[in-house]
Length: 92
Image 1: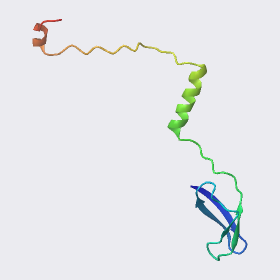
Image 2: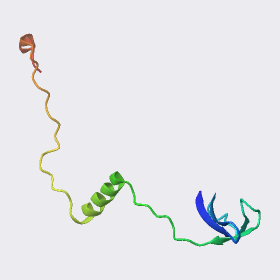
Image 3: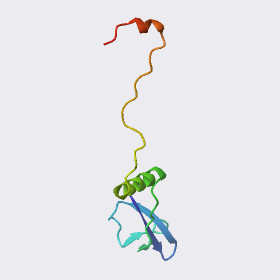
Image 4: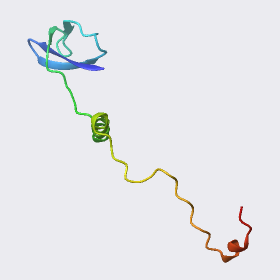
């Protein structure tokens, strides 16, 4: 839904939420029923959320400046069992 602004000559301006492309040049005023003409205003643009901004910045930076890997990607080996009886078990 997009918010469109209309101005009535008697009542003033008011906003209507309509599907995109469904705004007529004139609409009936919500208060007096008279003809209200559409007013063109600047679009309401918002900034993306912080996680999205960080993801975009990381994607743009990786195209020209790949991250340097400081450690290997090998999985860590599990810690040896702490039960002393496990040491007596046969090993593969």
